[in-house]
Image (tube, rainbow, N blue to C red):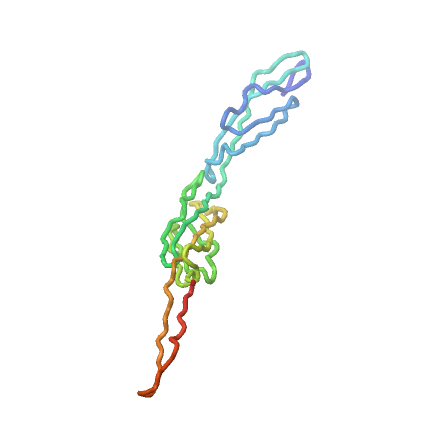
Length: 210
């Protein structure tokens, strides 16, 4: 500020930036600090919004200037989408079809989903689609589970928005519950003469979970 017949003693905030427009710290020497916070997260990449505050200058004789406005243009950047973890349950012989929870994006739309880490060897098989749907097949990898026993397997995925932003990976946990597997008997053969008593033992049966 200028003063034709004195000196500038300081500055005062006249009107603040207002609610929902970040926060402003204003100092008597005219310096200020503006923090957008999360009030502008809804701006997509390339979008902008103006906020304003006004201030006055005071001279050494107590004279106060007319308020003047400072305009701050806040430009948006792409905010990554937010994916969500999930838990599911299936039986050891039951194929599970599912859908990851819908991701959110404060400034865009969800374009698709990608598998980040698979379930790993010996944990059945997983088919994962770009729309977030998936199919989990236990196969025979859980046959050793007794009735009531369970084992968890996990995979993680990410969500991608329409501007290419990628979420942090989130985990889907599938609890596979065992059922009783019937034992498996074996065929056998034996030979004896027509007048000879035969004693024998059937082949040992096997039971994968008992």
